[in-house]
Length: 413
Image (cartoon, rainbow, N blue to C red; front, side, top):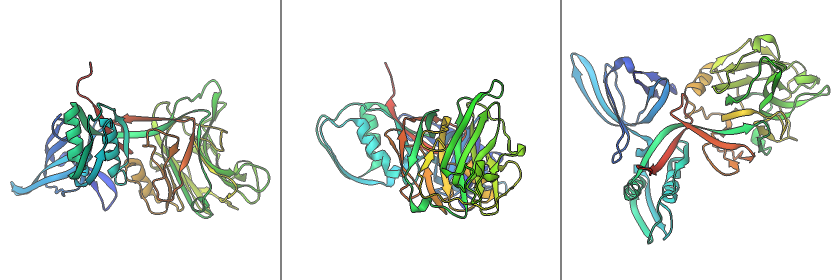
């Protein structure tokens, strides 16, 4: 399968396929040098510092930054030659001062330095193995993090690489994440929620499926006035139903008293094992359902909306803590206190690594890889506590939300 070259456009927050302008493309992996891509474009310019990625079979096999560029005229057209390196190159501008004591393992050093660029790109450290221990203290002054990381890799005969990665949490039907209520989560007028979801079990024939909760805050499902919002897919009794993606109604009523996506036009048949970006937007008059960046079904009229429920925490992977839990994986969760546009939602689908940050109140990327806390990258400190869900990741995915830092032996006996 031919390689596909894409360039990132900062002005539109989107990737553009430039394969038809590319006359040369070389992807290099070396144990002694950074992973790189050399390419030449005709009639298309590229900037130093611009992000690029390379795909094969629709999967991302390289993502990095243009570091070198030369330009000339070729047959009356602009010819641009460029070299891009993996995101490891970003560690070159991190100047460090450290003392690592005797007994510290090589992998501990890599993990410590690996966190330095996590505010620029989500870094998953699960690919870092421990390696050998220091035999004496190591004092480091005024050296780049990349230099130290490469030195550690050479000294241990380990690979040092960064691979495109989709990080996620696994939910087995009883697991969930709880985020305590906070003022930033008290959303009253406009809301957008999007999650990357994979299903481990669905049944459209024998009636054994469940009500699968992706997220929820409140209880918008009672005959009395109800509040909050739920985001779920109902596969019970062979259904393919979004009726319990519903929203509070001051007049009351089951499933938001009609404030839901329960009509047949919103039905959708999903495949087990496949990733989907599913989400909704809502304001006081209308709601829209989205699947893979495109509106699914008609715009829903909303009345008597009551989104706010300050008495209940937010849950991810269930509708309420331990109730109607997801069976599968969730790879990213984004909550906005505004209604996103179609173009903004399109960009969420094609570029999970760089979501829109305006009005973002919660951003879970699940790249921590270990521990019982998932950290909010939005800056609002809406961190979550994990109840039994387990960490996972896959490399070279179709859609990447993080980069896996890999440090492992070159030769395994």
